Amino acid sequence: MVRPSGPLSGTVPVSGAKNSVLKVMAATTLARGTFTLRNVPAIADVTWMGDLLAEMGMVVTHDGDTVTIDSPDDLRPEAPYELVERMRASIVVLGPLLARFGRARVALPGGDDFGPRPIDMHVRALEALGAEFTTAHGYIEARADRLLGTRVLLDFPSVGATENTLMAAVLAKGTTVIDNAAREPEIADLAACLNRMGAQILGAGTSTITVEGVDELSPVEHAIVPDRIEAATYLAAVGVAGGEITVQGARPDHMSMLVQKLGEMGMRISPDPDGLWALRSQRLRSVDVSTLPYPGLATDYKPLLVVLLAFADGVGIVTENLFSGRFRYVDELVRMGADIRTEGHHAVVRGVERLSGAPVRAPDIRAGAALAVAALGADGETVIADADHIDRGYERFVEKLQALGADVERLD
Image 1 (spheres, rainbow, N blue to C red):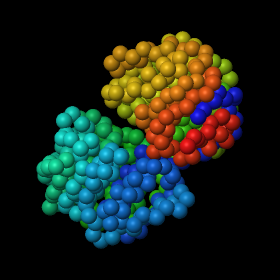
Image 2: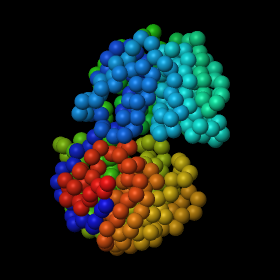
Image 3: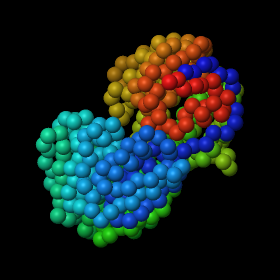
Image 4: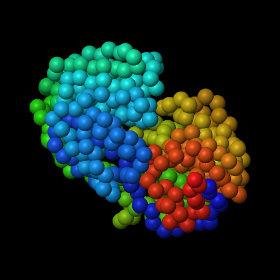
């Protein structure tokens, strides 16, 4: 439950990035031995990825923000449906399992055949490296005696396809060049971990990644980069409630486009020795927003930006260029009094000064967090159902907002 809050103040720490740690955990299947991962967020998705690794025969131990993973000589290279259904990111075990064991069996996301799903891109990239695929009973099975390096051109800079290809290529024979690769900071973090393991990767974080295959990798210690989406959530919270905060650990170099857009809206944001300092002292101005692959505005930022525009002075047009069905939360904001009209990939947001608290439902992780942020500027109480979605991507979300002065509590 969220009640309207006055200006926020204080310092809020950012946990490790959800979109990085899950892929680094998948990378531990590439080598035998003991891995130590630090700055790991205590979120449901990390627990589920740990369950998946344990199902394969690995031993996963949690101690605060440190996770230790023991990878044995032999694993069961299979990702069962009940775990893939919970977390679509688990598809990224396909590449590393195939590279190390020459085979993998992974449930199809959603339990159906490929259709238009982005997994097509993963499959085509791994086929280019020499893998052969069959599908049966809701599973995709991959085999390859030895993957061979080649040029892989992605149709779109897909993060998941880039990660799967990258983790397969590190043990492939010869050189692999991934063109039109995703450029997200989480890709660079994964590559940094792989390089520490003994891989030879150049260009991660650019659109062309070159991988020289090696015969064997070794376990390492690795610290996960801070979560830029979590940092953006606290920036949006102060944007709605007003006040002055420091987002500790935030990496401004990972959030340049978002910081620029928030500046155009009237927020004052600047780098701080601890992360990012942010101030909102007057009503924000409306701007137009378009999602694009990194370094453009991430689609995960969009629900937060829609919320900010719902309170801003003027009219903003939001365009979703990456995914369909990413406006499902708009109906919940409209229930709270927001003036938003959607049509296809566009939303027209006409700002109002206050929203009205109402019972709403969180359809996914980021939308759930955005609804909580919106409720900070709504008169009366807002109760968010299905708030367990938020726990998939945010560590101690309620407690962190409370520490800034927000009136938020978790209901049983």
